[in-house]
Length: 351
Image 1 (cartoon, rainbow, N blue to C red):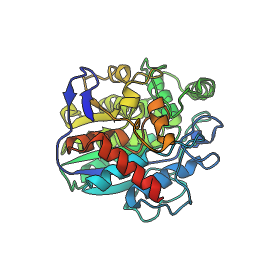
Image 2 (image 1 turned 90 degrees about the horizontal axis):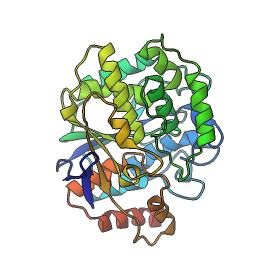
Image 3 (image 1 turned 90 degrees about the vertical axis):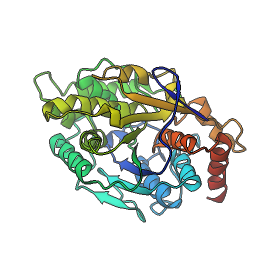
Image 4 (image 1 turned 180 degrees about the vertical axis):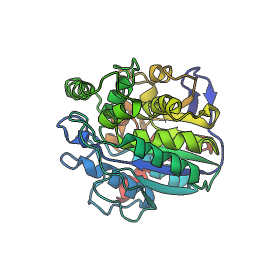
């Protein structure tokens, strides 16, 4: 495995040492729109972040008997995250309940009294200012256990809400967002995004727009970033969704009159996202008022004995549950592609 800078393609790395791992888990009812996402069991997609939270915390499931997977059988990227933890444990694994329908069991859970958001096609019905304030407060008070923090997410249909969010805030990124699908369902996504954008107008404040077209994860994590990065380094673990989180934080820092500390932020994703022909994370990041430290890690399932895992290399799933950052963390701590691959296989064999 090797880790590279998204902008320069120069080899780079995360710091060595232990990291805390936080999973921002939330449900937007956008995920209930037929064919909008394949990030989970059909008809049970709102369970996905709950199952991801349970699995990375315990390597077991309590809320359902089966792990979240796509209709073609590709298992959740939570497998990668848990495999890396098994090889080089994080200093902590904690879950942020940012609006879950089903509470995960046997996890270190932080609750913020945030409800699942509605479908953006009819208005998300989020109190964005309140959710953002809760993120800022948690960023001020979170006690770091390791040397730095990895912040991942599990939000099914989150790339749809992220696209709508970025467009509502005026960014020119309509064709840039990734998907868990190999072939993006553009008609369904476009109809949903257009319906959401029809609800906003240019006279609305940033918070008013976010309340209609965004999701709790993006808003909360943007607030968290602004405060937490004043104290320690945050690795924003994800692809185009987390790039959108940076856009939200960059926009809102003007509203709350805060400086952002870009030197304390690293966006980290997979090569599957960085090299995706159907999205352009680099272009999203170029919309920021600064050039972020953004990296990806090469990893392959080419040598796996479990055929369904090879679909990752073909472009399914791509990212989620902090997988890209976990691969970079593994690489920084001298773990090889072979070791991580075999750790993932071992989990699947023992499930």
